[in-house]
Image 1 (cartoon, rainbow over the protein chains, first blue to last red):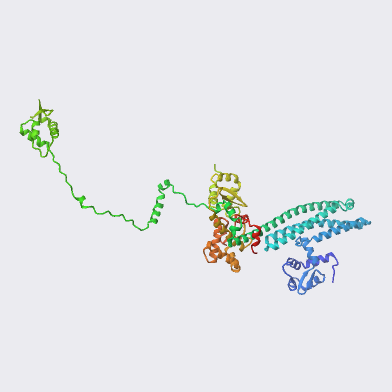
Image 2 (cartoon, rainbow over the protein chains, first blue to last red; image 1 turned 30 degrees about the vertical axis):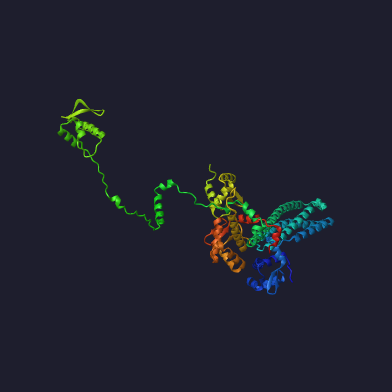
Length: 395
Length: 188
């Protein structure tokens, strides 16, 4: 088993094996690295020396990077996935021990060495806490979003919550350490650099504390969401069961809920209840549409107009009514030929029909008005039954 | 006094009993959601005058009526239908909820391996009216889309997205209270 003789040797070895180390580091999570793969990347002699220097270790046919180097890479590159609250605890213990040594030590050089160790630890605590919190947040988010099984999701989140509590406790402890305990040391410690580190640590712890509050809220929120989801699923299952058993109405307040529900979702308006605008129907552009519709609506059934019955023969017979007409022209001609005066003539004339006295008198007046210019009205009057009449002669 | 230029559009959608969700992939609907969100109090007052109450849900809006008009029977029937549909989709995937994306093919694949899902689909036959799996699934998805609970996000891949309004159905279920003793009687 060889050890490195100097830093230069170590760095040169690592540089020589850089492809292999890069490959192994990248695949550290996915699968176990095979010896044969490694041989293809660097030559065997170099690989053997690496194994001897315990940079990598051979395990049957597999190769593993030494844990120290693995952690070194992870820490430097800040890709550490494992949250290690144990290390922070350890660091606090180391811190306390070193403080004690510092206070006890008389020799200035050794005192300085302890001081350096203390500074290193303080720096490390701050950074590590912050990095832990970042990792924690990322893990919580991943778990919530990707973990398929509900029960496991809940327990993982609860575990992360526990980690959060641990980190919180550590922050508190560290703060206590800085502010309360070890007052002696922190009052005496001389360095200006030390003061700087202290301040920076305080700031980092503050930031960490605030972040953790956010983390706590996040965890609670996620847990609530999950619990709501699983509660919802359970409820759906129960309601479906009751419904299938036809017990939903009877054994729950389903009817009350539905009666109370006035959402339009359950009672949609039926559209198309409106009439056409009459003005629109008068427009020209509507006419082709109307034609189209009427063509579509032609049912092919012709409506029969009911035929009327024959016209009865009675209506077709011409009916004649006869009326006897006294022709005044004829009467006048007869009167002229007679030589009698008018009234007397009319009384004795042969009429084609029966005439009454009133009709004779009417005819007398008619003739006078009709043939006024052919008749002469003498001044004398005759009398007939209370009726006075003028004597009329033809010209 | 017009409150927004889109009041008519908003009314069109909501009066049919549908929803306006904020996570729609249709930009028009997203814009409408923004409009309703910004002018909520004025629109509430405006629609109250015509007997519609504008309700706000978790990232979605819908209408309700101040006095109930539909008869109980019809509401109960409708509720039964949605309980069954909700149960089916949740059985397909527990995570089925607002923002969830799926394709009919996913459900088809799951049907082949999950006997309970198959029996649930058979139970939904009165709404799907089809024996063939893919046609039945398509009908169910269309039912969801028609009411505004989901929408076709990508025509090419035939992938659908569940909208925020889906929480309405979940809330409906949660609002039904089952007394303790009866809860205990239900088998696991």
